[in-house]
Length: 175
Ligand SMILES: [Zn+2]
Image 1 (cartoon, rainbow, N blue to C red):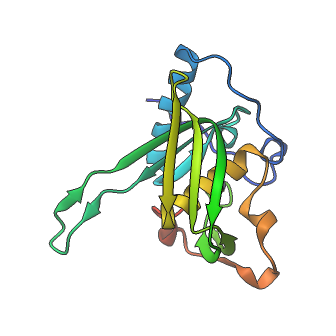
Image 2: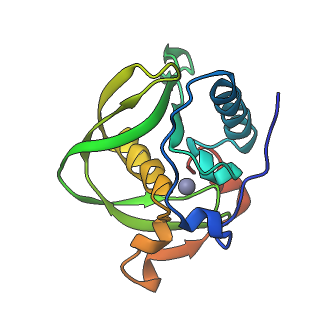
């Protein structure tokens, strides 16, 4: 288990385009394992490699398990690993609330597509393609932005779209 420190918004690496992954070996596997450890420790929804100081085009998203009214798990957590991702289709637009592990203590309202198709590669370099809507589509767009050096702060349309929150509210909603 290796939880790595998460860089915050002022770090220059978070404002740079990440580099395409060309090696699909052990070091990529280790990177992704550390990313999941870090994501779990931070109780986030998604994490991009640049957020832990690795400027490579990799991100992960973990959707929490679905539970019914009695608290029984009806669908397991879903894990997504995207290497060299590319959003190839978007549909709709909605203002969505979001946070970021690199912007602790804040949330904001950002316009995102409501539906996306994303393609990329898995850990072994095999092509993958996912269709997503709602929260998952939002997470894909947020993480993909990180690989291009874009934070949600860069997409805010006004200062009134950003507000500070208590640390306890941040759990499970930040990417
Ligand atoms: Zn983020």
